[in-house]
Amino acid sequence: MRLKDCYNFQDFRKLAKRRLPGPIFNYIDGGADDEVTLAENSKAFNRCDLLPSVLAGVRDIDMSVTVMGQKLDMPVYCSPTALQRLFHHKGERAVAAATEKYGTMFGVSSLGTVSLEELRQKHKNPQIYQFYFHRDRGLNKAMMQRAKEAKVDVMMLTVDSITGGNRERDLRTGFSIPFRLNLAGLTQFMLKPMWGINYVTHEKFRLPQLEEHVSMGGGTSSIGGYFTEMLDPTLNWDDVAQMVRDWDGQFCLKGVMTVEDARRAADIGCTGIVLSNHGGRQLDGSRTPFDQLAEIVDAVGDRLDVLMDSGVQRGTHVLKALSLGAKAVGVGRQYLYPLAAAGQPGVERALGLMRAEIERDMRLMGVSTIDQLGRHNVRFKDSCGQRGE
Image (cartoon, rainbow, N blue to C red; front, side, top):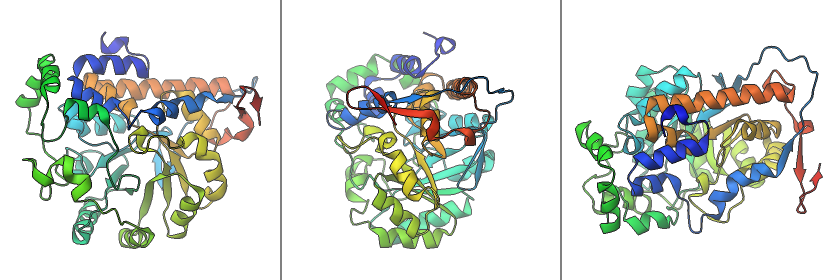
């Protein structure tokens, strides 16, 4: 299989699996516990049907949206994800360039492998900084100040990861950063020598946002210990309210899943929330963001921008979310598999296919702009598989 033979999410996944050592592929691919939520995230969209309008006289398609003050040419953005240069040696550089080509937003993680400053200087499209809250309050302030000086557009605080999820695929291979692979994991690396050649012949793997605070040499400051040793499990609403005041700009909470939490986010001045279960990687058995979307939009959609991620694989998934009131939709694995498979050309192909799907599906729905989508053009199946309001 070659890149030009990839037409959808599953095609990119297959190509990534061919190119990556097993432990790294499974780090991207896997979820928590029994991976029930991981599977359910995409299945949730199948419980919702689209109702197309015909003879609508659709000519030109405008799929642009404005999200937290940022103008996007398409209603899909690349969510911040960690360790991208582990998947392909260009990592965030490839993703930033691809998203700039398609006029959309991209995220940089606290565990990113390219610096905020480099990406901001090279690319003009909107940039998110995904932030983890640390026990060291001084460290939090220093990292926020650095993001402000880099002129990051949106601060995104992840609130569903005060401890790491139980990702048993990683436990089976011994995957960690720094590498401490067991025999099974090492064997998988030996089967994919090209990945190893690229890894050792390009610049050293680093975490520029955290390298002054996390040792890549191991010990309690390894990435494995980062969540348990450095993040603050006592993070509360007062802490976040202070962050919102200190940032004094576009501020988003990622991982909100209840109406009550969405209302509190609005109350403390957040300008956006992302409904997310971390792609099924944290609390297995948690509800899907798509299933929770309508009631949260109804509760707070007039007070802040509601976004969602987790499980998005198709243009029709995006249109269903937009019809329920999401302002935009984030993708993770949907661009990580193409990144692993082919670097920047892979991400560009994935975004191009997604854009083409959305344009085609909008025509078939009989709409020319995103704001023409609404609850009137979707119906949900009930528990017996029947369609209802």
